[in-house]
Amino acid sequence: MAKKVVATLKTSTGKSFAKVIRMVRSEKTGAYMFKEEIVASDNVKEYLSKK
Image (cartoon, rainbow, N blue to C red; front, side):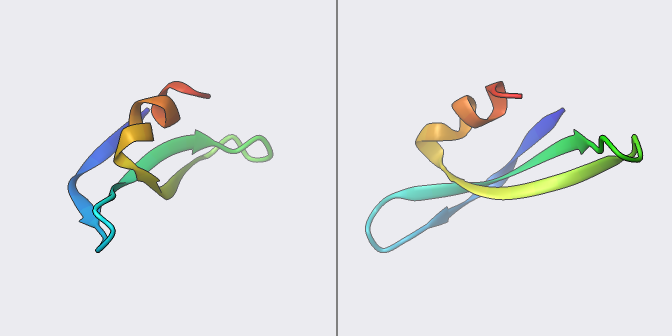
């Protein structure tokens, strides 16, 4: 599962970014971890669709 944070990050160049949080299962322990990344707003759907 993953979610997109509502607030977007903007730069002076005009390109906007979004902070994406994804829940990932650890292969060693089996516990869930949260992975945070900043992705360009154009690529958020692509990032969330890949596994």
